[in-house]
Structure formats: C-alpha cells, structure tokens
Length: 597
Image 1 (cartoon, one colour):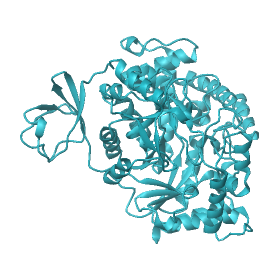
Image 2: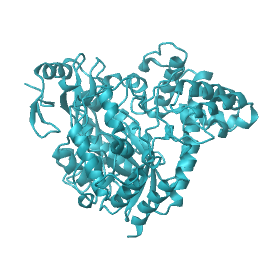
Image 3: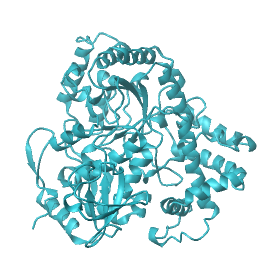
Image 4: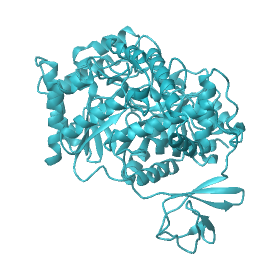
C-alpha cells in the first residue's frame, strides 16, 4: 500500500496543481518504509480533559509529576497539562495532554522591533552583536511605551569550530545557544583577568561592515578560556555546572562540543558514559551555556525568540539519529513568486516515525529552549508542523516532494510548552500553506503572519489574530525595493527573480505611502508605511531594524551559497546611533501609538 504521508500532488504558490516528480516520490516512499526507528515509545496518543474516555477507559496513566490516574468513563477535568505515559500492547505510549489554546499576546494591540542581533553591534561589541546589545534594544523598545517587544533571530548553537556557521537558521542545535552572543567582559571573573588584547581584537572588527565570525570567535574564545580559569575552581560555579550536567542530554552535548572543538570524532551519543566524571573541556562548554542563560535572563521579559525550521547535521542529529533522515535528503520549498528556482535549505528532515518513537523529545526541547524567559516565539515555516518539502539526495530544489507529519501532535507540543512559559506563539505561514494549518492555528490561538511586500491585500483587512510586517529577513528591505538595488543584486546572481512581481510590490508600497510618483525620500516612505501598518487590525505589527537603519541590503538572499554575504551584514552604524535616528524615533512612535487607540 502506498504511504499516504507522501503527497503526490500539491497546489503551488502560483495557484496551479502540480504533480510531485515520480522519482522523488518513489525515493521518499522507500525512505519511509526501509528502516525501523528506535526510541523509547511504541506510540503517541492524545488526550483531552473532560471528554469521554474512549480507548483510555480502564488504563492507568503515569503522570509527568510521578502520580498515577486510573481512567474511568471520562477523562478527569483536572488532568494536568503535560507529557504522560501508559502501557500499550507493543510498549510504552507517550500521552500528550495540551491546553486547547496557547496564551494570548495580550488584551491590547502591540508592536515588535525585529532585530538580527548579530548585526546590531554597538561600540562595545566584539565584532558581533551580543546579549548586552539585546539589553540596549530592549531598553529602547520599553522606553517607547507599553506593548513593545523585541524579536531576535534564533540563538541556536553552531558547531564549536574555528569558523562558526553564519546562518542562525543552519545551526548544529536548536536546543543549545551560541556563545558568540556572550558579552565576555560582563562575565563573572572577567574583571580578574587582562582581556585588553582580546577586547581590542574584537572591537577592531566593528570597523568592517561584514561580520567576520572566525576572527570574532577567536577573540571571544581566547577571552572565555581566560575567564574560565578564574571560575573553574569556584564551588558555587562548580555546583551549577554539576546540576546542568545532570541532565543526560546536556552531558552528551558537552561531550559532543569538547570532541568537535578538539577536531575529533565524538562517540555515539548512546555510548557516552554518563557515570564518568566530566573533564575540564566538558565543564567549560557547560559553563558557557549557563552564562548564556544568565545574560539572556538579564535581557528582560519582552523578548520574542525565533525557532528555526530545522538543524544541519550536528549535535541534535547526533543526539537523536533515528529522529532524522540522514542520507542526504534536505528540506526546502518549491518555486514561488520571489524564489522562482525553489529553495534548498540543506537541512535534514525529521523522520516522522523516528520523531514519534523519540517521544518528540528533540522537538519538545527545541521549543522549550526558545521559550525560556521569553514573552513569545515565532515558529519559522509553521507549515512544517503538517508537512515538509523533502528534496532527495541528488535532486534539485524544484524536484522535491511534500511529506506529512502529525499536525495535532506537533501543535500539542507547542501548546504545552507555551502554556508552561505563559508565552504567545506566532506561526510563519507565508507561501504555500494548507487550509488545515491555518484552521489549526486559529483554533489553537496562534497568530498568523502577514507581509505587505508579498501581498496586494490592504493592511486594513489583515486578521486581528496576526502579526504584520512590511518585509522579512528573506525579502528585500524597503530601501532595497525602492531603489531597485535588491533586484539588481538578484539579477547579477542569476537568481531568476520575479521582475514583474517586484515592480508591482514597489508600486504598491509607494501607493500605500502616498508617493505614487516616487518623489518622497526613502526615510519618509519608511515612516509612512509603518504608520499605515500601525492602523492595521493585526494584533502585533513589526518593524525591522534594517528598515530603521535604512539598509539597502537584505540579511539573507535565499537560493545562494556564495556571491551574497547572507547573515553577515551588520547595521551601517552602531546600533545606538540607529536607535537615536529620526527615522527610528518616528517609527517607534507610530507603532507605540496603536496601543492606546
């Protein structure tokens, strides 16, 4: 019988029905059928308090808190939200009990400043934006009035190598954080060592417009090693590290980091001896994660974190190899109006069976990590909860095929974690998205996403349960559109851009700004567009830091692996100067006014 998780036809972004390539369909069906996926769970069930017991009647639930409940003819009204367990015919079953909806983003409309934190360098940064810069941005947002949030790019951890991965969406782990975001000279013990040479090396990088993560990490790593020498023997620090390493996943991650940083092959994750004392290198990598948590906590409670769509082969795939497809299959997106060749994101997909057998642990931990201390999260490519576009090894981006996942179970994890964190959730539902996703998002209370540059819809028609923006990190900036520089860059890179669609977007934006003839300066168009966006019914409206800085360069150019320095553009000025600019002040004022309307 054909596997119905493989979607043989799909509706494209251009509105037509398209067949999936036969060779890709056959290969993906083979992948799904060829191997058993090991894990602690034989199955996953869902349960809802206050409903008829059905198949649960007479079964004993082992609750997450250690208690037990024998189910009668109805599910108890007071059944705790969480991850419970029970015995099944073929082994243990994970039982998901999620609240009906995620928490609200607040009773009143709000606003968001979206920052690529690595790019938001201040005069104090060591060549790379850090969590001290996040505090500066948070302060600026909160000074603008109530209802403001700061959304930042994923802080997911890259592999600990000399030249760290540039893309925050191509990380080695979505569970752990990137130590490049540490403000080194704010660490406990930093005042007890001479960091001047490292500080000068880092500060010197601020003179270069493009980030050089290799040199930034060299300066920071050397300084971190020096500070660690003052901390490793502190009993209080040691106790915190011991507690952190008591989690088996944390311990294995520390082993992986120390091996990769040393240039050696880590052992299989399952082979790590959890009873052996951790060595100094493992404790160092654990200490970095603890300090990242502390600095993130000090950034405040208005942060919104981004959850990337996946990970490259690295720590997470090493920790849960059976939960991923690791034969060279990648995820991406089919051709659309702005990416006519399709997109290959180079990330291995979750294996649906392996993820369920793992009890969704890699997904649970990824969501939980991003929600830690946050006001909300944005789920990149929310459609991945229902289906992902798999590109088999050797195939081109336009030759992919969609594979289904269990939407309800994936969303249950989000709802459980958001409930525990009391945080709202935005689902990035741009592009080809099924009705099932949008209906599920509405039923669960997730905010949808609207982007003015992508749609001819009047902002006045945006749904109230949405977050609206003018552009995103994968699209041209406002100035890049207005000037034509972004289109020129795409043509030069032979990306086959949608020229007609781009011109139409420029015409729409200028019309909305009251500048049909293109005579207003870009600064005025930026302010007017955000003022219009602010009047939208959308619950949240957003401005990017790139647009406040009047940048022409977009952060990321999808479809390129060279020729465009994606994820390496810094702001053209120190972030404190951008925030003090007339444009930033006026846009902030326009957005903040909506709270009291």
